[in-house]
Length: 549
Ligand code: NAP
Image (cartoon, rainbow, N blue to C red; front, top):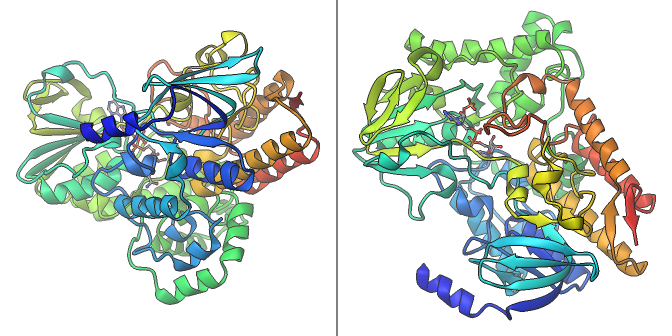
């Protein structure tokens, strides 16, 4: 690894380079952005990536059980029509290594790596007002001058490792799920702790319990989990989808969440109990996000309607978990269903029926107090471990952008601009930061959608915008403060009509101590379809809300 790093750096281009576009990150978004700017527009573009290959999220998140939560047939690039026909996914939700293989294949097929520099972290970028260029710095000591700067850093890529007292004293090994060692961790015969019960932990816990001698799960907030129902996809269904890929693409692009799930156009309160139960059973049996994103249309708005959905899941938990005390600990309390990201489970609740699995719940057993040399002390009791796995999530959306140390006009930083929460225009631009584009940035649908759909929408929009600028002899594009103010107000107004603010979720910035409470993505009234129209309208009106100079 060290040798590869040295070699890659030695082969790195000149210390000072001039480019049309710098793209930060080589995940889904960076790969597509490079393809578009380089092969469609002919720009001199280059990707800088901290990892040693492509993949982004799918390069870093290698914990046991890591797999996509969207059906694979829509969790892929749609711009390579031939590949859509050729590629065969092995199951409904492929595992991390398979998705990484897919991305490697795309990179090779489109010769993307030629313009990517790996093992290189961007450490800062400053806008030079006189030259109208960005100067980008890397940890390899390079300085790159570029007209356009595109962040493709993902929404969930800055690790949240809570500052537990005593972590440095722990005598065993510990890992965060977002940076598991290559080759995995052998849990065989080990006493293992998992801290956290979010979507990551829900995937990892069932897997780790199969290997570990003893698994102890530290839960702070119980989650509403629904079954993923992973498995082989019926070949006839796959063939039908392939035959109608244009239709699939159109439908996902126009949909609410970038998925083929649609709300039931009715209030849950207007359905009879029998009808509701039938619908709930249907969604539950369908698996995946159906229960979350295809439920009654007032589920996200009416607490009464939401309670009916929540009660159904609570009944399922009580029926599945044999020990009633454990079941009660696993019952979510204090926030509406669906206002935290829906974890998809494969035998998650069943795992707590196993002899070797223990649940330590912060409310009933006491919160984590400290990490000790031997393990974890919680609620006054010490639990001994060989391995601790932190599945404690991310500093979502704003974290990865702030970490880039960007300086816009007048040397202003995002820390300063976003001291009270993110402020963007359309989630793709920031006033005072000319020629900066943020793919799936804060206040865009991003994490509330099937990511590839939102990524493609942003990449296409940015590509059209750059093309427009070149054709019209414009050097700079910059969101106006007024347009940004209106967008921020709109994002907050829309979400305030929903139940989302009632949860202490990472959507609400609540998982990071001291992070200003603000809703991070955009939950537009018409979802990703409506958002796409808004962005297209802005472009059609000559980039309304932007100054083009
Ligand atoms: P997460 O949803 O933020 O969950 C973190 C967990 O750690 C929560 O249970 C949280 O408790 C707990 N935690 C955090 N700080 C803690 C502390 N100081 N003490 C005790 N517990 C603490 O993170 P995640 O599970 O990694 O998931 C993040 C997101 O990644 C997901 O929501 C999803 O969008 C994405 N994801 C996607 C996939 C996929 O598509 N395949 C898979 C996994 C994850 P609280 O709930 O009380 O905060």
